[in-house]
Image (tube, rainbow, N blue to C red):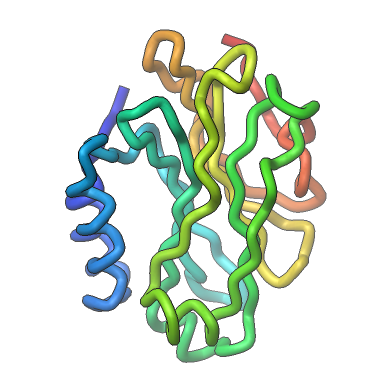
Length: 179
């Protein structure tokens, strides 16, 4: 199992060219009383010939999980009207449908939040089994990037990161390993 803290993820975001605007959100999340941390492996999303951003799964240490998207600074500058939908999903919850996907445009996100956007928090035990992936879809394309599948029952990764088309919005359409 590979676990990185949000502070490490923020440092990695800097190497993606995100800049310091995104680190404020990551630093704030890292200092919560729940000790949030990235679980599993994240996945880059490539579109229009460049990396648009990175999706990862964040466990907040208090029993909740969320999806976190970090925009690539160069992509935002080149594609100022792109929209990303960010969600957390489990085959063991709502038939595999992502939990309330949230949409963020590059212009809105960078003007209000910097380069980091998060999905809603979902209690990990709302799914049975409690195995989750974080996902992102760009420009309503039907193509998505998913983080690795993390099983909270024993802390293992049961499937690696995935990217493909015609698999949004249901995680049952992608490789999924039942823990």
